[in-house]
Structure formats: C-alpha cells, structure tokens
Length: 318
Image 1 (cartoon, helix red, strand yellow):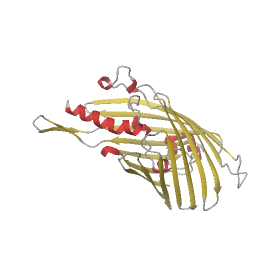
Image 2 (cartoon, helix red, strand yellow):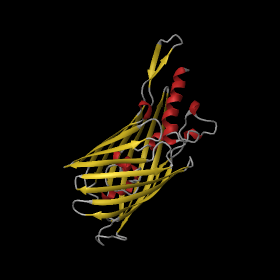
Image 3 (spheres, rainbow, N blue to C red):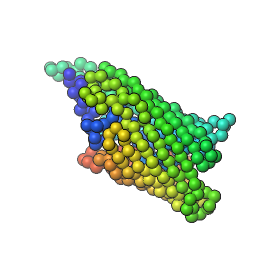
Image 4 (cartoon, helix red, strand yellow):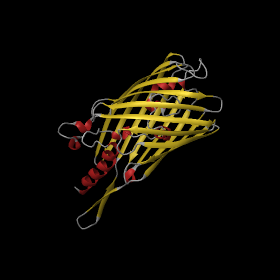
C-alpha cells in the first residue's frame, strides 16, 4: 500500500506541476515535455524550424530540408529527482532525394521509490519508467518548398507492477516561401508549419484509470506556427518563430515565441517565452558548433520555489 502511495505522490509532483492540469492530464504527459535544448531555449516554438534533429519530433515534414545524417543525445534533469532523455537519428535517403527518415527514443525515469514495513524495514524498491520509440518519414511535394511528414510512436509505461502499451501517430506539413524577403527574393525566409501530434486511442490504466477513463487519453495536440528570418549571410542570421499549441483532450492552450541570433557562424544565441505553462515561461540558451559537432544548452527558470533546470543536447552531423 505504501508503495502505491509513493507512486501517487511522485506522479502528482512531476506531472501536475509540469502541466498544471492534474485533473485533466493525459496518460502520457511525458510526451509534452521538451527534451531538446534548442527547443527549450526557443520556448518550445519549433513546429516551423527545419534545422536540427528535433525537427523529426515537432514537425517531421521539415525533414525534407535535411541533407546530412544527424545523431543527437539530449538530457533534461527535471524536478523531484526525475530525468528526461532522448536519442534521435536522422538520415536522408540518397536514392530518393527529399525523403528523409528519423528514429527517436525518448525516456522518462524517476528516482528510486522504496517500500518499508511498519517497523521501518526496507522491503523492496522500484521506480517509474516511461518510454516512446518513434519512426518518422518526410516526402517532398515541391522540392525545397512544400513537404509532408508522418510519425508513429510506440509507448511503454512501467507503473510498479503494471506495464501499459500504446501507440500514436503524427501528421505534418511545412511550406517555405520568399514572402517579404529583405535580403534576397530567391531566399525562402518565411516558413509555415502545421502538425497534429500524438493522435491515438486511449491507454488502458486498469486500476489507475478514473471512472470516466480520462486518464488514459493521449496528449493529442494541434501545433501551428511560423518562422521568419530577418537576416541571413555566410556568417550570421537572425530569425523569429512563433507557435500556437492546443491539446484536444485537456483544454490546454499554449502560445510560444522564440528568437535566435547567430553573430558568427559557430555561435547561436537564443531566447524564448511561452504562455499557458504554469511552471515555466522564459528561457534562454545558446548553441556552439565546432566542425561536425554541435552543443546546445538551455537555461530554464521555474515559476516557483523549485529554482531552475538545465537542458543539454549534443549532435553529430555526418
């Protein structure tokens, strides 16, 4: 009994605070947390960004613009001793130009939960573990202009003595245009993105489910946004990005904006803000590129007495 009580406390601590809607949260809220440092630094506004491995997760249609293989590792130490991590791999298919595939493994784990007897003797220990294994693919409708993409997620939740499986899918579209270009009419400086993410049937939680079954719902969302690049030269760039996210099953809406400025080719400075997330709003960070390796970092102050968290991503292009 004590083990289940500890489970309940940890779940409330992580997900009700992380998403600020405990009564209507979904069965796989860990999918709503950004693990990528670049995404975190931009306030989560990423549906119209076509650079970096996180493109696969937030808008797989944007993979049509990738010309190199990418392997990335992300880590996000979260509240309550929990941890989010992900490994993402992107590979263009040379035989079919524009078609790119992606693989991602995202994991969430908690600190160890120990069970004690009434006399204080330790009986056993356990921890929570969630995982999503995903496959993505993109297809160009108009070369370097318009593309579509899709993804499928296989979800595992390990809750003490119960393992729960599920699946969800994504569909997305992306479009680039030279509308209102300040520096070159040939450069497509405006990007529009739309993605439906985590669409799927409810997970069955058995004894953990509420009578209405709402706890089994997926965090399905509609994501619409744009990216406008004000400046682009060989050594510098400046862009603004914005996104609106609406979670169908929870009534949760978020507005996100982000800025990125690269004064030099190897350095990117980023800031972001999102409204509708009780725990955090502002964020900042940077990216440093050295040859084929890129290191991204995000600093995220939390709107409470918890303090702040850090996000890290290391990527290899080859």
